[in-house]
Image (cartoon, rainbow, N blue to C red):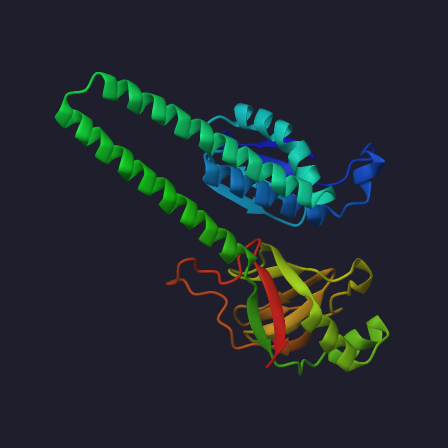
Length: 283
C-alpha cells in the first residue's frame, strides 16, 4: 500500500501490488485490499479515530478527502496497515482484536467519567449532587443507545440485499460458452454467489460487484450497445453490475431486475453502496 497526496486536503491509498511485496500477501487480490481498507476506514471514522469528509473506494485505490491534516492521517494509515492486512489474512483474529480495542476504549472513557463524577460528588451541594446523578443516568442511557445503534448498524451490514433477477439476457449463451458450461449453470453460479459492492462508478448508483472467481472474468463486447435498458444485470471483467438507468454499455447482459438502484430523493440515493452484500434470486 502506497499513500499519495492529492491536493491540499486529500490522500490516495494505492492498493496495487508493488514488485517488492512480501510473498505472504503478494497473491491477495487488490480488490480485497481495497475492501479491507474501506471497512477499516469507515470503522475508524465512526469511532472518531479518523476525520474525513469522503472515503471513496475504486478498483485499486481508496480516496480520503476533506482531511484537516493529511500528514497526520498518513502516519495513522501507516500504523493501521497491519490491522488491514490481518483483516484479510486472519479475519477472525482481526475481528476479535477490533472488538477488544473498542471495548478497552469504552472502558477507559467510562472509568474517566466515573472519576470525574466521584470528584464532583465530593465537592457538590446536595442539589448539585442530585443533578450530577441525573446527568450520569443520561450519559448511561446515551451509551446504551450508542451500543444499540452500533448493534443495529452491524446487523444492517451483515444483511444481504436481495435482487430479484429475470435471467433472460441476450448474452447468456455467450457467457455459458466462455465458462464452458450450460446456461442453467450460469444462472446457478450467479444465484449461489454472495456478491459485494466493491465501488460505484460509470453512472450514479452503478455497483461493481465482486465475488466471482478470477478465472470466470469475461471480455466486454467488441462494440458497445448504444442503449442498455435500466435494470439490466451484466457481467464484464471480474465484475457483475446492474445498470441503474438506460445508457450505452459494453457489458454482457444476462438478466434484468425491477429494483430501483438510484433515487436522488432517497437517503442514501444509491441502493447498493460500497460494502453492501448482494444476493441474486431468480424472479
